Length: 221
Image (cartoon, rainbow, N blue to C red):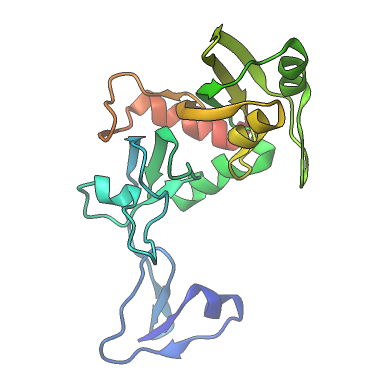
């Protein structure tokens, strides 16, 4: 039997397997007498309502709790995209790398909606800047859809929809217009929403949700 890791495969090189080798069926390729062995992996898809305090990664070198600690599944799964540690809300979990790549590709422009509670007052000029795009260190953001849900002396409540995935983007956009985010929750990812999923819990995607995601991954919005 001969096996290659994904990195070896790029160089078109195989090595002989030895006793104790472990195979990652999602990344490694195995040949027996020159014949490829195909592994059939059932694709799984879950909608998780992430609480604050969890890192969006499979493992954390600092041993902080990760979103994977919230799941009771045997399959090797991973989160699609990221929510920062203090951000709550909708996160897609799967083992379908192909679909994940499609959904995260900038050309697909998958919309992500957030509800933002912030300290400070959002001026008409600030609202216009958010809607037109904010200048960040790495360049201008795309225009965002923004609705003011509430504003009073204590601060404001906004609904923001973006289709980019820059690091801490919503928080940085708000900071640029004088707002300090106190609470941030993602309420939608493409066709998915949080209805019926309590914070800290998760559920499998329904058939119509998965189909809508696949169409979005292939065709974009």
